Length: 329
Picture (tube, rainbow, N blue to C red):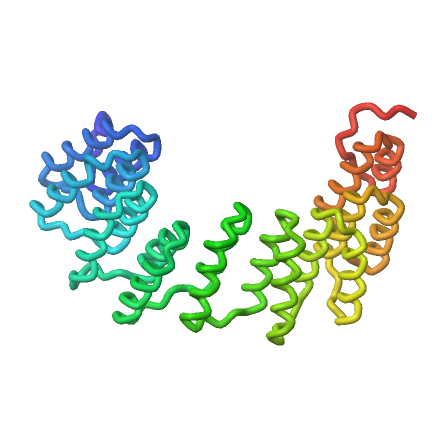
């Protein structure tokens, strides 16, 4: 562009700098910054520095963060909330809690760079992952005092990895914290927890969460029962899969493709191919359109049993190929 006589601009330089940062080429990115600083008409702005700071955090070059902050201060460029949130998240992941608290304190004292709900999510999420509910409570109260409330769904989402890693003490502490802070539990809250237990086949805790959900008068839905069926299937409790299906019918839970897939998957895990095929036929009779997951369950089950003729028949019936290279007839 320069060779063709086009003059560079601050926006073009920043875009080039951003490209280097995305490729983790920090030396090249900083060379662009130096060129911008040397050009009176292409001075860097807060957006330029934010891109560089983000790259430094992502590559764990925290030694460069302070020098960039100092450079910004000398040029009277104040970091914005987005910039500070990026740094906060990086410090938190790296376990640099003192530095993180310094940034957060500066934000609380600032008139132009105030914390927002994303700031709160970062802080609560970090302490949640550590199981430090006392610190969660401390910072929750501090944020609440300046009118910032956390997102309910964010805290629920944070508890799911704890279930998957069987960190039940930490998860219980977070759930108790949510109740203490008067967060209203919803169907979605319970579905996330039940689903997390289902994924790891923890039928006991899954059942406990489901019973608690019902005792509180919370409405169950198709997603709830899909998780229950999936959980019982993963735990090898096929009799409870049948019981869940009957309960769903009793409660008039509308079936869906997702629901039928969960039942078919449970049948496959129980090696009950006849029931799996019956459910598949029932699914189509009730006008629930099979999706890629449906066919994947069928084909994977047939392959596992060496039933290549079944895959061939399914391909003929559905008018599509499922990647069977050789069919031995």
